[in-house]
Amino acid sequence: MQSAKCGSLQKAREEIDSIDSSLVKLFTRRMELATEVAKAKRESGAAVFDPARERAILSRVCDEAGGEYENSVRLLFSTLFSISRARQRGIINGESPLVKRIREVLASTPPDFPSKALVACPGIEGSYAQQAVTRIFSLPTILYFNGFDKVFDAVEKGLCPYGILPIENSAAGSVTAVYDQMDRHRFHIVKALRLKVNHVLLGVKGARLEGIREIASHPHAIAQCRAFLARHPLVKAIPESNTAVAAKELAASGRAGRAVIASRACAELYGLDIIAEEVADAAFNYTRFICIAKKPEIYPDARKFSIMLSLPHRPGTLDGIISRFSAIGVNLTKLESRPIPGMDFEFRFTFDFDASARDESVLQLLGELSSDPQIEHFTFLGAYNEM
Image (spheres, rainbow, N blue to C red):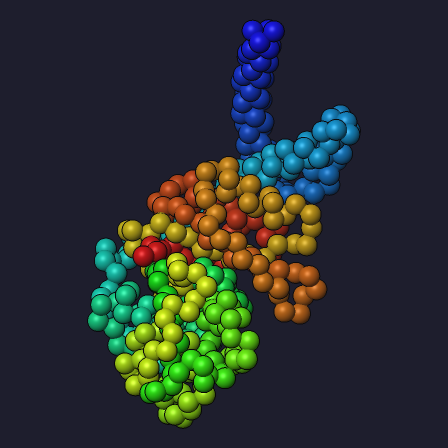
């Protein structure tokens, strides 16, 4: 019986292999015909995207497939349409302006990231952002700003060549305040860093944990220490603009009943006592920071991309984009969606993915996405190395 089952499996697999070979030949022929269509459209000036024809084909093939496979066939042909449109646009338009620009930046960027720079940083001395600056730049000159938007402004207006911003924490998730600023400013990501975060509880000299009634910190730091706070239900969590700012203000006030969640560096900087160690929920607590610049820079070690785009509010549009990355073997490491102000149920998506800045298949995909009329807004945020 077992031998019969194995024989049946082998026979089915052999037939599948034969069908796959036929599919490849048919797909190749379909792309050849798409090339002929593109040349004809180039001569006539016709648009690449023909929604009426695509709807008619989908209706026909779904009817031919029958109820059980209708959705699968719809997905298959929607993907085929996407591939065909991309090929046609490449033939009609040639290499996209974005890809040309990326090649120019690759050629003009120096081989090594600078060690010295004037850097815009949120918060004050002792903040995790300041620690990120000194990890990325060995000899930075730091200008501190009150708010993420001010860091974006400093870079966009040319006050500082570079700026540092937190974008994600392994425990508390995305820093949505930074993502919400991205669409309002012109910038490029040129480097990133994953910084180990070690939260401690700080108090004034002589303060003891049992006497604390308020704990102040940045909302993200508070979110990373929920379990510790839950063990002290009588303590009120107070949100502040920055962990180091909270520490400095506590030192100035001398309030024995208040503590702050901040870095160990703040204890020495502001003359505070460490009254509790390792107060974060997770032992492996990391915050990801991005380094932004006004002009694009793509260094030889760039292995990560970030792009931002808006899609029409229709079924399958996001899935269609994701499948195009999967088709060329690119790993999406982050997908962030944020509502577009003033637009009902419309979202802006930020994609992070791992790839070489010299990978031709990736550059081709970026070119296709940047010129795809179904993508309402497309922004190339940068290609960079993450430390």
